[in-house]
Amino acid sequence: MTDTDPVQPAPEAQPDLQRARVAARIVGLVVPVGLVIVGTIVTLAWLPRLPNPMAVHWNGAGVADGFGSPAVGLIVFPLAGLLIAATYFSTRLQYLQGRARPGGELWGPVNRLIPAIGLGAAAAISSLNIITTAIQLDLPDARQLEPNLAVPLMPAIVGIVAAGLGYLVQPRVRIAAATEAEAGNPLELAPAERVAWIGSTGVTRTYLWVMGSALIVLVASLILVAGIRPAEPVAITIVSVSLLVVLALTVLCMRFNVQIDDRGFEARSFLGWPALRVPAADIADVEVGEIHPFAEFGGWGWRLSVDGKVGIVMRTGEGIRLSRRKGRPVVVTIDDAESAAAALATAAREARAWPGEPDEKDGKGTK
Image (tube, rainbow, N blue to C red; front, side, top):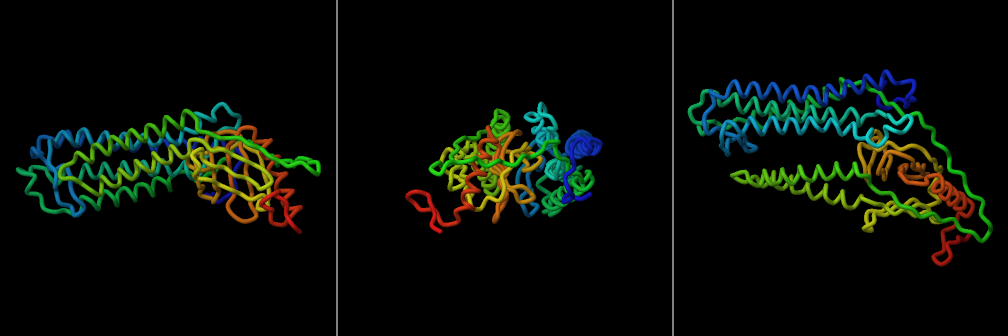
């Protein structure tokens, strides 16, 4: 089975689901934690043979340019490895919201990708620890180290290979929850009536905990890299930009106001930007169904899925799915999804019945 194969109903795929979850746990949690343990044991065994101070930082050319106590490696590398291994639990966050819902389990490529990335990062960190420690064994003075390109290159190669293998060894299954989408039923309007629906969709407490934790980690990382001497402008820039991006996404995507009328669909951030609009005439079909942000999009917020859908997905639960005549499908999690779908289906029907361009004053078209 490939990632593009038809999605399986959950009741018929539970053995595959269990197998996929076990494989993800091994790839994303067990192996990375094992690498941390092995690396710590090796460092402890080599500790008496290391110079003091030892080289603890290299630049991109493989030149040692930072020195410190040998104990630094016993703290930094295991801590980094454990933090990376913790990314596995992000594949489980969907169940914090969906576990009480019938058929709430769903598995897809994203659930394989996150553990694989964690394995790759953990392998890169572990290989960096082993390489930088091994080249200093029995060295009287760490300043005698010659430039060594293996220090920046080998961990990157090991990490990429490990991530690829971690993705490939997991079962290639896509498992859908046992829920059925229902088509939105257009409303019957009197000649003078117009359709309108207004609502909003916002983040959950779990989202705030996750994004808050990510911000704390990035702030701590920025303090750490800013304190390295000599300074690393590239590292400081990367962490600073990452912090700003995560902060901006957290704030901008906290709540979207949704409006449906005869013009079509619009979802706008409570700050005014970003906004997503779908004209009524562009809507081919509207469905109501269960939305699973992690399995379909890899997370919450404004998202783009691997199969091309655009999503404003804040939680696991009911929402609407829009099929478009031109453009990407749109998925939105929202309360009272049936009413929203009915209003949007009505707007789409009216737009097809009146194909002219809307007039700016009264919204009517001319044939």
